[in-house]
Amino acid sequence: MSDTTSSTPTIPGAASAAEVGSGTGTTRWAERPAHRLWVQERFARMIEFVGPSVLPGGGFAYLGGDGSPMPGREPSLLLTARMTHVAGLASVLGIPGSERLLAHGLASLEGAFGDEAHGGWFGTLERTGRKTAYEHVHVVLAAASALAAQAQGAASVGDPQALAREVTRVVEEKFWREDEGALCESWSATWDDPEEYRGANANMHAVEAFLAIGDALDEDVWHARALRICERIVNQHARGRDWLLPEHYDAQWQELPDYNIDNPNDPFRPYGATYGHLLEWARLLCGLHASPRVQTGPWVLEAAEALARKALSAWGVDGREGLVYTVDWESEPVSDVRLHWPICEGIQATALLGGLTGDDEWEQWYRRLWDHAAAYFVDTTGSWINELDEDMKEGFVVWPGRPDVYHATGAYMAPLLPAWPFMTVAAARLG
Image (cartoon, rainbow, N blue to C red; front, side):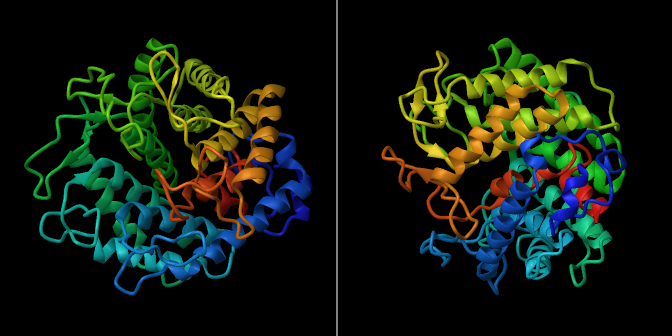
């Protein structure tokens, strides 16, 4: 971290990046005091925006653009876990109101969504449906950030140690496949009916969660597992497709290239390749490359650059600024909606690549992505418009409203922190 950070109020600049972790993981633009102040102020505004989302019965409300709950939308495990992670980071940074969000999130995870009879977590407060790896690894992420917040003195935040122990046990016993080096996808509520499907999306978020919990618990095994996931999905399948990463597989890890071809706007399992996920994988590979907890080869950073270039080379491919949601296997657009989260992931990936490689290519993309975000996505509340329609106005096809601040949090805060350790742990060490 540059000495210039001493002029910004949220993240102290007393510790250097070398003292905190591995590499600055950021671009020159992100070192500028005015830029740092701009993103930190908007992050604080966003925390204020989501404050009213606390629901007495557990979980967080699905918010609309005006900050009020959207009708017909129920609390979910996914958004509760993500909000708990964000609140943990905000608590570490000292943003008022965040500990209330953190305590509520942890209480919801420990109670409202938990299955005392069979273990694990339900995806909704109705306590029905399948138990998914995707949702469970987000509980791991929430536990990791809550542990870092607790270590920084956060009060009344429940028992994140117990949550971490239980969720890592469930993930190890039910989802992790040692012979595959990856996670299976989902089970019935009583753990007796596994889904014959493997998904890159759940495993991608497992990489983030494993990096986070490995740092929070000081356990190297989680980073080793993250590397194994990346070796399978990125170094084998994505490399084999010239970095157009396949999302869907059968239980034997055979690619399913036509999966959901009739449902191109699915928010979790869309047909084709997803440019935003290429950038997200690139971001995670940077964290893995920087981690001293596992020995990685040169292919990790090489793959991160290749994935980011693959996605960003398609900027404006359909004649409109930005990134399309999905493309087919000839790189032709399938779903052309503009979602906020690929831009958030691009900001993080280019910041990390800029810091790790020193290549000006990533500096320029970092600036361009933030200019695009400021023009089209960032609201005066600090929250982000979730998607844009064909006129580059707020859209409502895939992710209406403003329910999810997870990706925006990464865009705001990851460029200000080292590539390693995980962001909440790094912020705690800086504090």
